[in-house]
Length: 256
Image 1: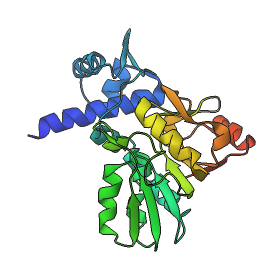
Image 2: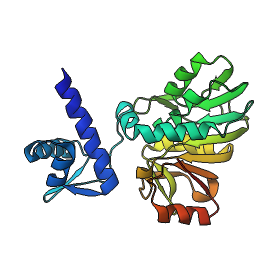
Image 3: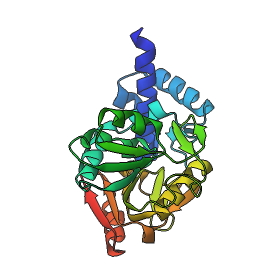
């Protein structure tokens, strides 16, 4: 029973390692994960057939055209960093705030740290966030969107005619598939991007919550340009030169 689980975990870890390093050889992966090169080749072949990695001579590399991973897979990737980012993000929230939390797994890491806040209104298109907040009766939850996206377990659709159309959001927290100075915060699915854009437009302060592996990556479409972002919360492995470049543009960067 445990073997398939270990197989899945190893292959998820291979994806994460390639996203971090860009490219690794079969020998390097074999040494890193303590399995034979034959096993690594089988892993890479399976991941390549799913479009999750790009095979190259002697190894594999990350691809900038990765399909969207399932919610459960994304939640497990870089979980420790997401936990730290979520805890820090929660310190920016005050009693009585109206905030937005998107359907990214990093933004969802904020929810365990909201239980002490009073008279909080949370606008989210994430069913996972809404379910988690059921345990906190002092938090009012509003959900925009009219269509269910199974990949992100979220609701997407136009906000103009929804219950939140006229609500002022003080601060919004947004995860992303990629972040660069030129493209800002980007994501894969266009329906999700449109919903994020509408939420961003209604926020007085936009906070990007992204782990270090998202820096320098570009996904399908931009939902928040650099001049719309007030703060980026990320982990200490974020590339130093990019962090400094972002700070020189007037965006606060918090490392955790």
